[in-house]
Length: 128
Image (cartoon, rainbow, N blue to C red; front, side, top):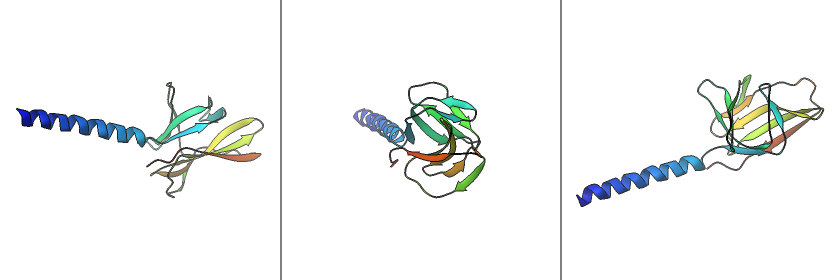
C-alpha cells in the first residue's frame, strides 16, 4: 500500500514537472505597437508564437482572445534561434509583420510589402 501511494506521488510530481517545463518552453514575444498580420490588426502586447501542423504561424495573445494564423509564403532558413524574432515592415504609420523566426522551427516569410519605408525587429526572451 505504501509503495502504491509513493508511486502515485512520484507520478503526480512528474506530471507537474513536465507541465512546468512545457510552460517555460513557450516561445513568446512582447510587441510594443499595434501591427497587421494576415489582414488583421493585433494590439500591442505579449503573444505566444508557434508553427501549426498545417504550416501556418499561430499568434495567441497572452491575455486571452482568439489566436490568429498567418500562412507562410516561404521558408527563409532553418537557422537556429533561441528566441522568437519578428520582422516588421513599416508603411506610413502601420507595421506589417513580414518575417517570423521560431525557436526549433526556423524562419518564415508571412507577408511581402512592396513599398516598405523601414524594417524593425522585435525579439522575445530566450527559450531554453
